[in-house]
Image 1 (cartoon, one colour):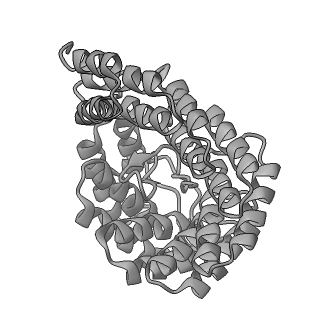
Image 2 (tube, rainbow, N blue to C red):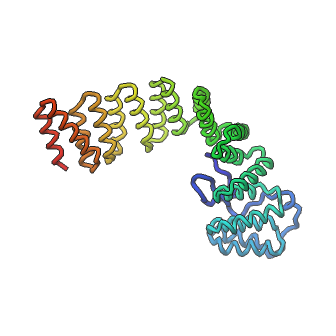
Image 3 (cartoon, rainbow, N blue to C red):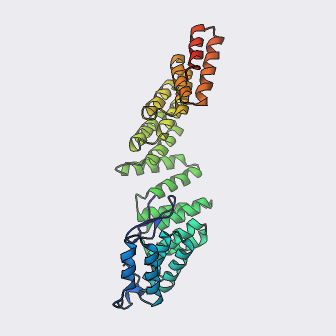
Amino acid sequence: MKKVKAPIRYAALSAAVLTLAGCALFRDYSRSENRETAAPAENFIAKGDSVYEHGAFAEAALHYRESARRGEQGPVAWFNFANAMVRLDRTPDAMEAYRRALAAAPGFLKAHQNLAALCQIQGDLAAAARHYMAAARIDSSDANSRFRLGEMAQKAGDYAEAQAWYEKTLKADSLDEGAHSGLSQVYLIAGDTTRALAFLERYNSRTSAPKAWALMLQGDLRVRRGLVDQGLQSFQDAAVADPADMRPFLRMARALRGADRSLEAALVIEQALDSRSSRGELWAAAGNLRFEAGDPIGAREAFARAFKLGSPEGLQGLEMLADWHEKRGEREPALATRHALELR
């Protein structure tokens, strides 16, 4: 999902929310800031900027606070002080400083955005919503604030409100990833699979490099509607989009097994294991699929590899297969399977 751009750089706060508090050199001030007089010769903002750039955030904070104390570029001084507090993991101090910046300059867009994100992280969703709404009013192109409002509405169970905000997000940024994901989920919650699938297919067709998550969801929806081969193509595309992700292969295998194509499902799992040969539980899954497909020899080989990797599923698979051969009076295959149990 799209992150809010910080002034110059970014300070990581949460992988699930957004990056905050950029470089202290932010100069896109509100109108009230633009009316302020130039800083005196001893420019504490500039001093703070200089050391901030070298990672001396505590020292930078002292300079910014001194600038604010002297009434020099107050909104920016408090904003930059807040950014330094974020870098120092002093969230309450950062939030208070953003509030001071907004008290001096109510139209300070970045202060609203960053304070909203901190409020969301802290669980104060009402305050987060107020500041996201303020940011959305100030900037008609602010897709992230609109998306966050939709996200919070969805989590609160207000799906109509969530849909409205996601749609506003897409008006601001027609390719916003988070809004497409959220809106697809809202359609599915409403039981409108057809609309969700059409929406995703349109999104993926407009994106030069579709995301793996969007292709997987598209595949899930296609399979759900009985379009198995089309779904498999979506999963294959997802595997190409993110080769490190196992989920497309597992989805392919599940879809194939559901279509009574267990041997093909086993081959898909084994394909995934070409670069992940240490995943014992997946070798066991391949063994089960080969057994379902009527390939006990292939099943024994897969179970044996899982067993050697320490997988309990591999052990269970070999014992099951040995019992199966013995019940059928197949002495040599049963002995071969029992022998595999002694090879770890």
